Every structure is written in structure tokens, then in C-alpha cells.
Amino acid sequence: METMWQRCEIENYIYTRESLLALAVADVQEDLFGHAEKTRRREAMEGAIGEIEQSLANLNQPSPWSADIKGSDGFLDILFAKFSQKLGVPLVLRKADYYLLVGFLPSQAILTEVRDKLDAIVAVAKRAKPVE
Image (tube, rainbow, N blue to C red; front, side, top):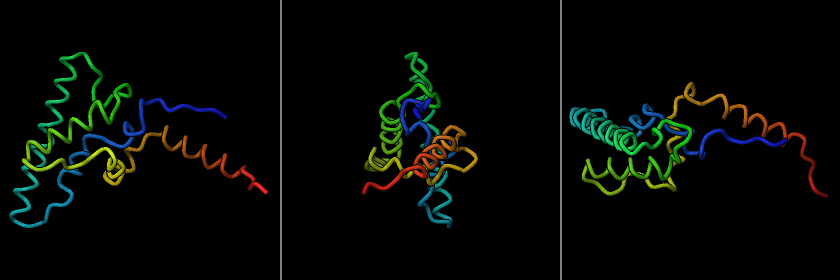
């Protein structure tokens, strides 16, 4: 059985606008100061996303939400650098930590393709026989 992913790389499956906004405010306290900080972070993330969307469009490059963009290098690396710059903090998230985005992805946002591929992996694993 041979199968291919439709998107450019695995990172393309683990981020949405909503999950990026959720990540931006995930570690903020629920108090008076936290409310203001959440607003600041949400606005910084929305601004960074908007700027990159516009830049990509101006350069006739795929949208960050497209299957054709290389999600890590073509969007997320740039996004987290810009987001961190807007907040005036060191880089918030590095490529080695992009797997953390999965925790902010709502289950309804997981594409059917991902479920189908994982089911195929399980089916192959069930047929596997141990080497003696």
C-alpha cells in the first residue's frame, strides 16, 4: 500500500488561525493584568498573521493556509519571529517545538486526510508480524 500526503509537509496539518491565536494566549494568567496581556498577544498574533498573508499575496506566493506552502519555513518561522518581535521578547517558538501546536488544534479542525492516513498506518501495523 502506498499513499501520499496532499499537503507540502506535516506542519501544514497542525496549524489554523484559531490554534495560533490560542497558542498566543495559552500561558497568560486569568486576572486583571492577564486580560490586558491576552489582548496584547492576540493583537500581536493577528497583526503578524495579517502582515505575512499580505506579503505572501504581494509576492504571488501561496497563502499560509494553502496546501502548497511549506508551512514551517514559508510561514511559521516567519510568523513566530514577527510575533516575538511585536511583543519584544525572545523567539516564542522554534521549529523543533512546532509539535506543540497540535495541542491547540480543535479536534474538528483535524482534516479527514489525517484520520484516513492514521487509520491506514494502524491497519498495516495490525498485519505486521514480529521478526523471529
